[in-house]
Image 1 (cartoon, rainbow, N blue to C red):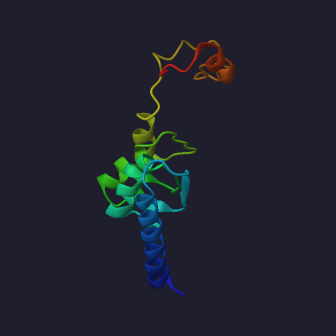
Image 2 (cartoon, rainbow, N blue to C red):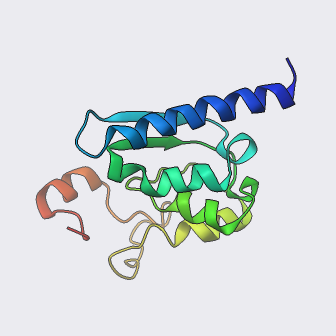
Length: 137
């Protein structure tokens, strides 16, 4: 089919989906939108607006991409980083710098006691959060 027609078809489907989300109002059933390779295929002003306002219309979004560098502008970058949950794996270059600011630590790193893993904050993070709560709560 080719990249051009596929992109056009994807844009039409996404526009119809957004129309349905906006027309249902704020009190209806939750809708889930999954967009793979957002930066390469779907990063437009329209979709960034959908990411920013979707929660108001009970729409949860899951967006994936290889790097933040694939996003065409600051509006899309802000929309992607303005999320309830952010998950990142191995990062590179400027992405690591940008994403590191999205995960603030509650204080300075403790002095390492084990030289093999110098930046381990806690060996039992889930239990610590369960007992003490998250620092932002």
